Image (cartoon, rainbow, N blue to C red):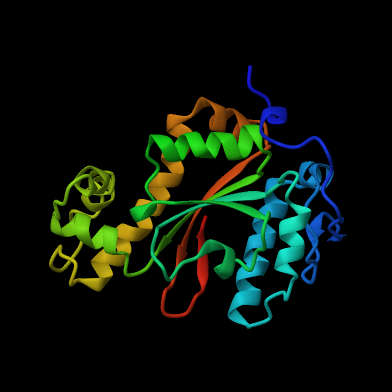
Length: 235
């Protein structure tokens, strides 16, 4: 049977992370150890991502020694969260959440859809590597959502866009034209798409369901506004 020892170095990483209670210190640039990661709750992880986006918005990002973090994480990694986001160049998870090397896993796919390989990656990040939180991060003005709404067909992208169809169908009675020029409609579909992807992670994975039931994992959806950089969590 696979275990975390197959994927993570047994040695602890250099440095420790300071906490206020069990949350992260806002000015900390140190990497997580296995022990610190294990001490975090899913709510701690969510609190840190919220705080990170606030640092990003206020231009108060941490100025850390990235090469130092490369060296510190060379022997193993203990990220506290997984962000499943779109490939959109305007939404880099590490930057908009003000996280450093080794802090978070990042899985990116057009339209932030939860297809099988993404679900498998989520199982690895959580069950085997210890992440406490999964955030499905959608965003405004999403090209994949617009393509799905307009019925775009293009090679293998055609199949991927089919995963967004349930979100489109959920807004079948929305006012206005149902095309990519209707910004309100696009935003509604993108938001629902993020919610449905978060739900499908549990529906498609007994492993993730069990972790949620045991209180070891939280799965949430969020939306990034490409005009402001603000991330809104969808509770």
